[in-house]
Length: 267
Image (cartoon, rainbow, N blue to C red; front, side, top):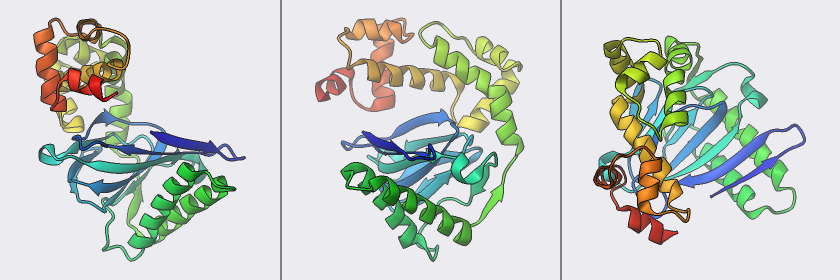
């Protein structure tokens, strides 16, 4: 569930929750042009940002700059809940990518104030009281003023940014556009113009997953979304690239820890 607004300068802000209903959290590696602020509220998570991984605790804040490869997974199958704020990056960073020292917690002297800003943004976007747009954008600016003043960061044009944008981007695109068909490891490596051994090392280094696991995970996520549609489970399984119901059910249970029927009944 999310809420968004556009102010007169075309700055978009969105607020949403991830990991509701006591489910484990699994967000596959991806990147985007928006800034993402995460406030971890329940459970422990493994948070990836580029080639770095940290374990987050309830109350931790993580800030992901534009074009940073990132993923979020529940730690040891724990149910997790995360409040997510996403905003256009151009309003504050222009074309620069800023890498922050994550996570941000109560060791930061402005932690409580920054957390209050995140919660106020979500509250304003949810309640939509009079002039809520201005209150939300004010809190966003206030958050980043404290973040830049009281937190460590560097301007980043690292080899990792260039690497995943210029190399792995083609493989991610292949998966997104062709997940319903057979995609071999050779196909994935060829899309990134790499040998299979080099591709496997790079993909695992950058995503923390093998390509096979990533592909199956992506397909299961697409299947989960399709369970809202008036289609049979068999139709969904084959449309998402699985060759048998047995394989589909096994992978669905593996990645989601529940069965498709349970998810469909929850809608």
